[in-house]
Length: 283
Image (cartoon, rainbow, N blue to C red; front, top):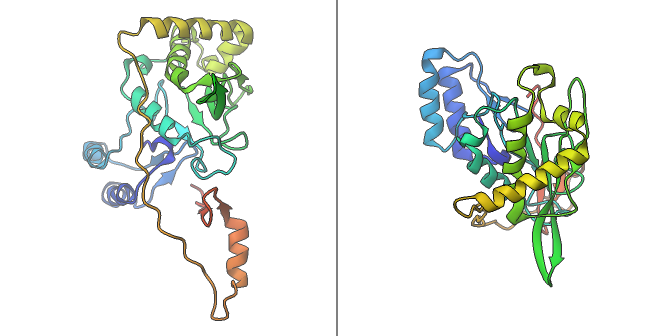
C-alpha cells in the first residue's frame, strides 16, 4: 500500500487497521520506502481490500514491479530547520503525475524517487533520483528548485548518485524526471536482471555521457509537450493548535519526560513544536 511522501491521515490508518483485521493477520508491516504491507491475504479477498483502500484515497498500484515505486519524502520535510522549503507538495505531485502514467508502466526495472528536506536527510544519493530543495536568486527574485542526484543505489554493487547540474528550477523538475525515465526505458538492460537498475546504465555509459543525454532529452521534452505541464504543488495549510507544556505541580519538567524529549524528539523550525519519533519493532 503506497503512502506517497510518507504522509498518511488517521482515517486512512483506521481503514488499513480494519482491513488487516478483516482480511489479514491483524497487523501490518511498515516498509523502508514508506509503504504498508498486509500479509497472508487470501486471493479472493484482494478486490475487497482494493475497494477499501480506494475509499480513503489509497492504492497499491505500482507499489511493486518494473515501474516507479512509492515516491518518498523525508519525514522531517516541513519541520526541518535547515530546509530551503517544504518538498512534500512536490513529492506528492510527482507521485500523482506518475501514477498510472504510460511513461513508467514497463521499465527495465524498478525506479525510485527520494525527496529530502536538507543535505542531512532523505538518502538522496542512494536512489535513482534524489532531490534536495534549494533556493537561488535569479534576476533579483528567489527561485525554488532542487539539487538533483542521479544513478545512486545500494545492493550487490552500490553507487553514489551524481549531481545533474548546479541548480534545477522547480519548473524543470517534471521535464527532468520525464527525460530520465525515457532514457532508462529506452537504454536500460532488459535481459540481465542482475544489472538492469539505472545505476548500472550510468556506470557503464559514464557519467558525462549520461548527463549530456539527460540534458539533451530534457530540452526535447520541454519543446515537444503538446500542453504545458506543471506539477500542482498547492496545498492549504492545516490549522495548528498552540502547544501545551508538561510540568509537575512545582512547575518543573519531570526527569523521565526530559530524557524522553532528548532521545525521541526533534525540535522543529516552528517555535515551540517538536516532532516525535516512534520506533516500530521489526517494522
